[in-house]
Each structure stands twice: as structure tokens, then as C-alpha cells.
Amino acid sequence: MMSRQQKLRIAQHYIDSINAHDLRAMGQCLADGLRVEVATGAECPMDKRRFLAYNQNYMKAFPDVHFDITLTVSEGAFVIMHWNASGTQTASLATPSGGIIVATGVKVYAPGSFTFRLQEGKISHAWVFWDMATMLAQLGQLPPL
Image (tube, rainbow, N blue to C red; front, side, top):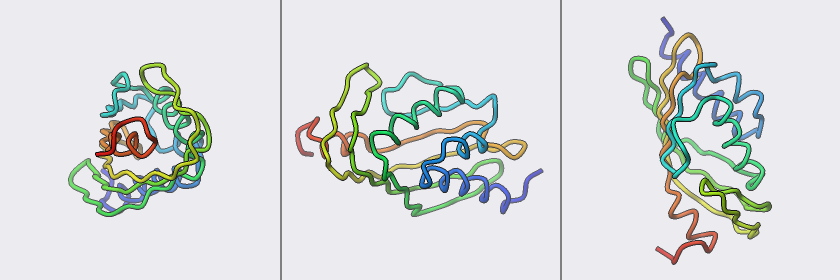
């Protein structure tokens, strides 16, 4: 059984890998049988391969993406992390519906959270919630909120 500190280290390593834009390190945090549910219109659940491709799409469009953790809670097999993300869109972003948002040069900010279930030293299930409407409005894709 993993200690609370071990679970927190794994979750923080995942965040650190995003901030370092290191897909290989991200993949090392994820179980081979990973199941991910993302509240962004993307087809879910995602497996490990699709989730890494999903992240790569955002990292390409926002190469300076950075997550600042505002709250971390660990209970049982779960770690919950609330965050504020920021990044500048310098490349096109593919949307879940097959569209493209051309590069805008706009720096966006959006809050969100990860809920991770950890098993055997890896993230085995993840739920991702973030304020995509705010991000899309900042990119000029929605009327200002």
C-alpha cells in the first residue's frame, strides 16, 4: 500500500512533467490500463495513448503552458489537485470536433482540477475538469463571458 507522501509525489511528478513539457515523463506516471475522463467534449474514456496525444495537442498549441497548484487533497487511493493553468497559443489547436483554432498569440488563463486514482505507484484513473469556456472566450471563439 502506498503512503500518502508517495501518492502526493506521483501526482506532483505528473504536474512537473506537464510544466516541463515532457510527454515521456508524463507517460511514466500513468498506468498502462489508464482510464481518463475529460470534461471538454473529447471522446471519453481515453486510454493512455489517447490521453498523451490529447496533452501533446495542447502542449504544441501552448508551448509555455504552466500549471500552478492551488490545493492538494489526498484521501485513500485518491489525490485531488486544483490548479490555474496559463499559456500562450502560438500554434494551431485541434478541437475534439475536428476543427482548428488558428494561432492567436493570446495568453490564456483557466482554472481546473485533476482527480487521480493511484494504484501500484501509477495513476490508474483520472478525471479532468477545467474551464474551457473561459479559455475559448479568451481565444475569441466565444462571446466574452
